[in-house]
Image (cartoon, rainbow, N blue to C red; front, side):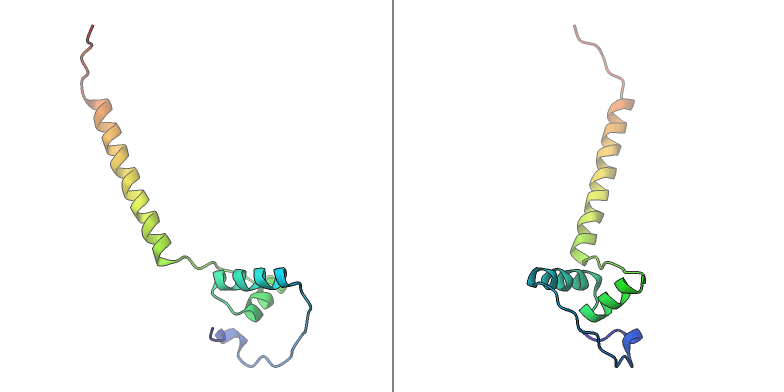
Length: 88
């Protein structure tokens, strides 16, 4: 992953020890945010804003669901506006 522009010129290092599980979690969280692990840790520790990346596939699915919702609401509305005859 390329280094984010804000991290250019960073030269000091801090070494920490984490468990294998913690390391895996850090990599996953950094990837979700579209950041390197270093930039992710920098932003978390300095209370800077983190943004999650949303995949194009997820956006397409959400858009599709919104379209289905609109379609269903139109059908429900049409059903309720039609005159209904009672059958005995």
